[in-house]
Image (cartoon, rainbow, N blue to C red; front, side, top):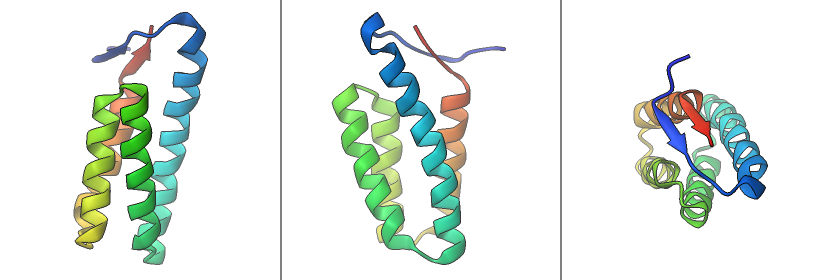
Length: 98
């Protein structure tokens, strides 16, 4: 597997970051379901939380995607929300925590 992204963390935080990334993967599935159900408000909330938690953990890419999700939800830009979910999933799939 070719890895494009590496996250270097203190070994005691490695499991926390791995679980966090898995949670973001799950949230992508929730966001896709929210899109189908028309629940844009929940997407805005998830994006806002992602922006804050990514910032707290120093995960800039997650922070950027969270910010973009929140803004896209405010604008009801469904295509952009979908693209951002794919972007987040791609980021997670191509990231290793070291």
